[in-house]
Length: 328
Image 1 (cartoon, rainbow, N blue to C red):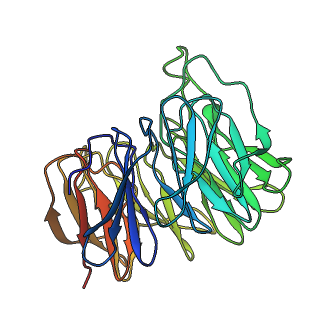
Image 2 (image 1 turned 90 degrees about the horizontal axis):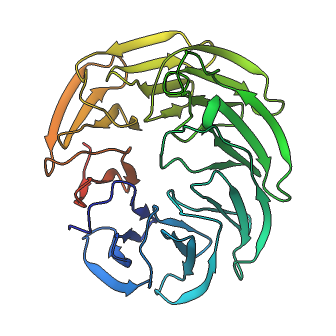
């Protein structure tokens, strides 16, 4: 199903449905098993960010800061405005809708009526990388990476900063060389919060105090996945790595996707799944990183990590193709 070519318009998945938006302002509900269209609505604005779901809401943001919440039947619950363009999926937890805007601000709004509860803002460098990184929410804390390699933990209830730590420090003589932005989602579990910066480093921190546990030199603009005691990451040159969460040491490395612009890794069962710039889905063995299979989609890039869908996965290509793939 083609839904419009905007790389940031990722779908959202629930047990019964897949919600997909397009750049023309259309929002679709598809059956999770068959892909059949259940309903289509016109939001009235150009959708710019991925779809967010939670607490019986479907939330999408627009180019001019529009933010709309719909129920599962497609009826509008509320419509409001945030400070600027929404480039990522709103996150919904504990009665809050948390949205990040292109000006670097993070706002929390009530799920009931969309009224703002708190706002986090910080100054940004002159030159930053435009990206679709949003926020991750874990146990009442909002985690977000920023320009200049900063990782911030924010209390979901009141917006107070719990801690702030540096993943990477800008280096180099020119503004371009000094870019060291976190352009992807942090990966968080009960013990650690980990993030990686473009032209920078990867690092893990204690979730309670923000103390650095370890760091090492790696550049990535796609991001990482944390699964139990292993971190999986695709670096800027196309190398896919598995690393020990406790120490950062390399468990295995696969160089077969060199310069293929791989997506962040997705882990399911015995496999690590990665998309590339030609629309191929690569399946690696989770234990040693060896190539197991390769699947062709629609020849357009797969810029983001696939999503879990039942026993398989769902992915969207840059040209708007939606694919449901079984993993056996």
